[in-house]
Amino acid sequence: MIRSLRGKLISSHLIVIFMTMAVVTALLLTLGRSYFHRALEQSLVTQAHLIAEALIPGATVSSLEETLSPAYNAVQQQRIGNLEVQVENKASSATADHATGLDESNLAYLNAFSVELSTSFDTRLRVLDNLGNVLVDSAGLDEGKNLGDLGPIASALIGIQESHTLEIEGEDWLFVAVPVWMDDSIAGVIHLGQPLRDVAAVLADLRLQLLLVLVIAIPLSATIGLILARNIARPVQSLTVATGKLSQGDFDYPLDTSSQDELGQLSRTFASMRDQLQAIEKMRTQFVSDVSHELRTPLTAVKGLAETLRGGAVDDPAVRDRFLASVESETDRLIRLVNDLLILSRADSQALKLRKAQVEVENLVSETLERLTLQAETRDIKLCYELQETPLYAFADPDRVEQILLILLDNAMKHSPKGGTVWVEGSVIRVKTPSKQTPASLGDSIPLVLPEGNWAVISITDSGEGIPEENLPHVFDRFYRADVSRTRDRGGSGLGLSIAKAIVEAHGGHIWLESPSRSPKVEAGNPGTTASFTLPYSES
Image 1 (cartoon, rainbow, N blue to C red):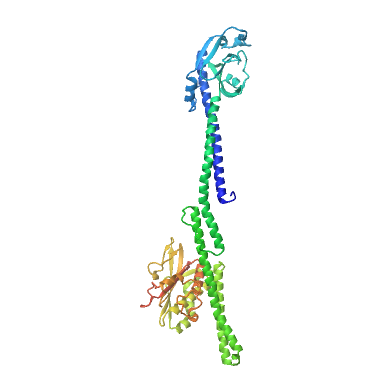
Image 2 (image 1 turned 180 degrees about the vertical axis):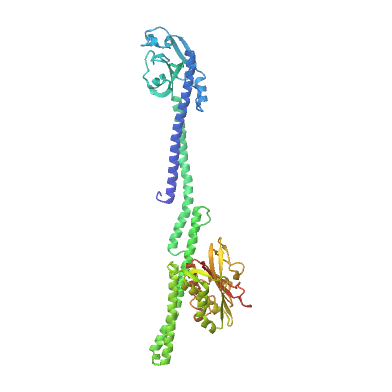
């Protein structure tokens, strides 16, 4: 239990509660003791003031204007309200002999009096002269003794008021030594004390109450901690089970994502990750299946041709040459497929090498169109280009950009009717803040948010039958063909647009398709398709 998350949460919860209450209890008892001691000390000083006025006419004690404890008034009412000082002549006895040096004391006359304090509390009073001789002792124990060497009394004799605690007959007493002033000089000391039994009783009761609170709070905290720990541990346990299921290939284990706290956010993040992994797994499975299918077709053809040649066709030169040409064609198709897969693999692993330089788009486009002139003439298609800003420069790898153009132009020619036109357009987009932007030739808006910066935009528009709206989200998927009825001789492997997308994104750009096209270059009657991509713009 203690090793589980729930056990750790409960244990930590109880430990924090217990330590907090222990610290609070200790602080309350310490502060309470200091609080009551201070109040009692102030009460004793006030009593000393009253006693000094009763016994020594014209005498004053330490100032009472200092900051008083909030509990002082209550203590004063209890301890001073019934205080009476009774003074009477002392009966002569042997114990009444003067102490050494008493004749030099300015309060020697007090030795002839007996002082009795009438109060409901035990109080011990000593009155000492300026030499430290005890003139009056309410307990009758120390009269005639010299206590000038006693620490607090010695401090009072030089004008410093001090308090201290003494243990008398197993009980703690608080004493205050208060200097008595006459004519700006020390006339004597009033040493006044009271037992701390009341303070001890209050502190003991407070300690008992705090212990009772602790006894009640611990089980209550344990119950609340158990509920909280269960609520916290439940989604974690669910995530743990879901993780185990995911490791076994189960993507459908139910997961509660309704919570709005951090654990709910974690569950939603895990669910999103699981969905992405499921999509990746499906894509990987489909990709392996598609690659196998694409490889199987040329390999089967090569195997069939080889078997036919072995069966005797090799003896006929015309048949042999035709079969060997077919083998060469299928081998070339395999090589192209392997090269395309290699490009995609490098792009996926961020290992696609680019030799970037300043590229003049017009020269690159014209050279690419010239390479495709014969193919365009064979299909009776006209190739044209128009740049809105010349010269137009891009910072890119010219070989890779040419590869993109070849892919997009080849697709455009395949989808354009005989006698149609394929347009290549170029422009510059300057984006100050990330927002939807568009080349002027494409209309008012495009479904794309371009990052801040300057971008060279190249668009290729055909005048063909267009792409169905439901197929547009998938045109960049690998091995995807919008028209599954097309043969591989016309439709290719289905990797062209995927390769173009990988190369564009490796440059930091974006690529998108629009069908029907927004371009005014599209001939009437056909929806057409516009393929556009952006590259980092380079100043001339």
